[in-house]
Length: 294
Ligand SMILES: NC(=O)c1ccc[n+]([C@@H]2O[C@H](COP(=O)([O-])OP(=O)(O)OC[C@H]3O[C@@H](n4cnc5c(N)ncnc54)[C@H](OP(=O)(O)O)[C@@H]3O)[C@@H](O)[C@H]2O)c1
Image (cartoon, rainbow, N blue to C red; front, top):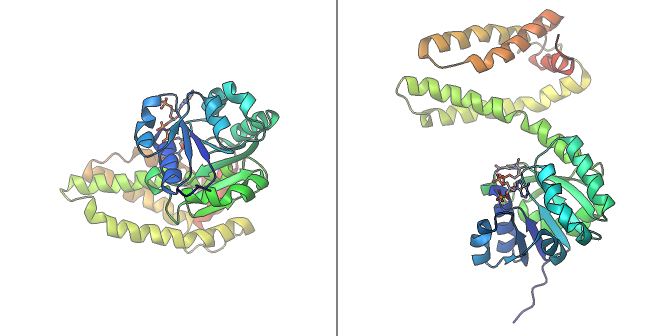
């Protein structure tokens, strides 16, 4: 019988994301210990060879690399408090979402207890875990990343260490993630408008994909403008976006779709015009966002 030389891994937290992480480690042949507050959620993983630990302390003690994916940093700390004696020397990796300040506080707490800590973030959905282009960002102990990078790459091929400051992954997750709800709500609004005419949301997908490709192509251009603080290229101006507000109102009147979620965005555009950015590139909205309102 051949010996398994893959690094033993512990996964704590078996919600949607944690279960996907544990499944990826199992699929890659890593001896995988699991713990979850609600133990029953581990049953499908145990059926695939995972080793259930009776407590967080036993789970931490079982492997040199411990990946934790609970809902928040507060929950992570609550779950690991009783396991503190097992933390010294462990490589501890968090993959929950949270604010940068929470990441810093958790990192300090765990380092004080002797763990070597990476605070990470999964920039995708559970079904994408393990895919070659799935992005996971980490920040904190570079040595942990260097030692366990190959194991962590099992979770996603696009695996990045952002720097030693432990809150960078949380900061980038929030910065990048802030586009998610507005983009999806815009898609849902469009789908609602089509449904009101008896058309399918599916009929829109090909065109929406092109639209998002166009937005994607603009990101490096706008990033340059923002970093230079130069918004002189007004080909897509703030004024243009102000006039589009009327189109949104017309769509609401014609289809009965609720477009009220756009009101704060229209207000933002108006404030940019009031501040003198009307003829400038729409990226000048960044300057308004950087200043406290009112
Ligand atoms: N799902 C996604 O699409 C996605 C994508 C990117 C990032 N994330 C992030 O990944 C993290 C986990 O998300 P998820 O979707 O896996 O959430 P979830 O399905 O709701 O699972 C939450 C997990 O946290 C545990 N938990 C919560 N409070 C706890 C406490 N006080 N003590 C012990 N365990 C506790 C739950 O245990 P029980 O099972 O006992 O309730 C469960 O294992 C979140 O920070 C989320 O933002 C999720």
